[in-house]
Length: 330
Image (cartoon, rainbow, N blue to C red; front, side, top):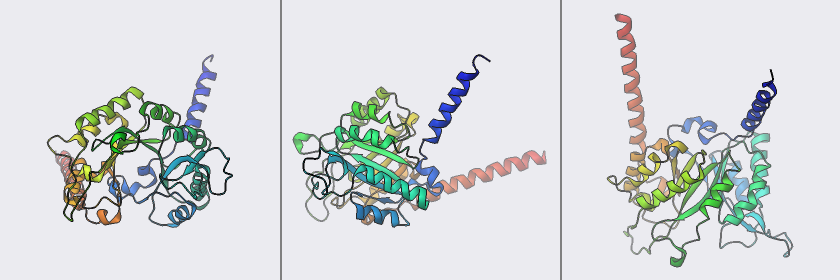
């Protein structure tokens, strides 16, 4: 009996922890569980009008928005910077704070039963660290992703070459541990080489060294949070099936339930949709989110991946039924 109070306390703590945990995308939208490419995104939702439109849409499943340190257009110029929604270099006339962004989404969820998750893309470690307490106090129970580019990636995406500065990996992962309900979206800075001509192709790809460094950072953090790796479509298309860098990335971090999130910028023209489709099918549609412009999305051919999965499931079911029938006969 002496141990009963400890047991009760532990159970209460477990219940409280569970009550504040967010659901996953797959739990909120069971129909996409075996095909994450079906998840529909509203991207760069960094002002009130765009947020209202995204919440009014019947298609939006995940809302992606960028968090920076700044002030709103209604603030006094002497106001110290705080977490607001915006994407560099367009940081004038901002009208939506992180606090308001979260409240709008959570109100829509609780009052209107709006099913939607959120991905917060942090542009600096300062913006992330200033946001942690704001996010924590809301006890978010919808899908929550926290994103940052924590390593330099293709092609030689260093600040010296004009790429954005990577967010400090250790500080980001340490901070993310304070948000245990969040899925970690950790990626690489990228730089696209100049393209010329209508049929220009992209050079560059994610390397095994880049993948191994990412896995090492993840292991050093000792996190058990789920992970998605945001990877740029034009480089994903160049992932060679023999080296299979992206496949190894997922395999070697399997304890974190990893996925890929393939993204593409509007200005990324001539992404090889055929090669991209092949890589996605090789990885498996149950492991790949797609956050790309509609023009590229419509060029992808992924039906065979879905059909193959269903065919294998049907074959397995048929074999199972046959085996059960055989046992009954004997």
